[in-house]
Image (cartoon, rainbow, N blue to C red; front, side):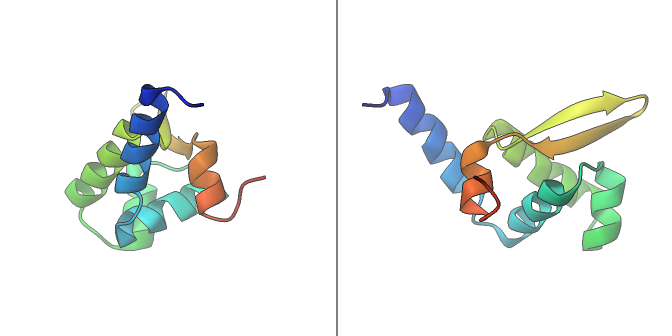
Length: 89
């Protein structure tokens, strides 16, 4: 049986994914790591909007950022999110 913390974590993840923009971001990050500017170019949305969605995904434990000089590259770290998106094993 899972701990209550595990249920909370999964609940946060499931609440974060359903937004269409966040699904597009996760789908793109599953294919390749990228930064806010790259995501912005692909989705043609304001940088502030992209950053807000990235924060929600990060807070839910779906993505993680890695600093490269002045930029942060994001990647999907959640195996549950990978499975939900149909790309997990």
